[in-house]
Image: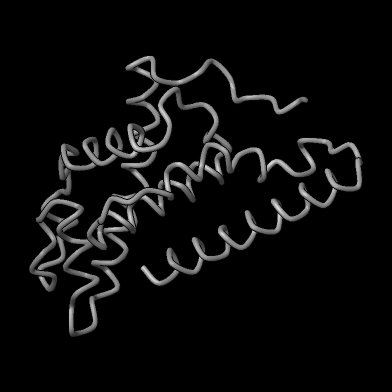
Length: 170
């Protein structure tokens, strides 16, 4: 979970740098190739996911941060027809309804929360006073990766994706 926080901090710092670069070029009246500073243009889709006044529990903050990180890595953030809080709500609803498809042999008997839903397991891992077994973390990470891929497919099936990523030509 710590790597999620570090990755998210890094992403926010990179967005800030991209914004400074964009503003500087604009003040100097220089043309900017959108693909050289794609993070500035992607941030128009990303920032409404982050900037809101809704208090969220830690597990939802983590899963949204992972969604943002995944969408940026896969370069799909501009493909969603929904944006901002409607996209966050759709994602959180999908995660809440996502079936726990662990096989019995995959479940770690040492982790009492192994059979709980994903959000509960993330919350319990974050609030645990003892070390969470590495196998439990791997299980959470694996299911989280699967949820992220499945959400993209879900949105495609619901026709909630644009046919292509946005081109940022000015």
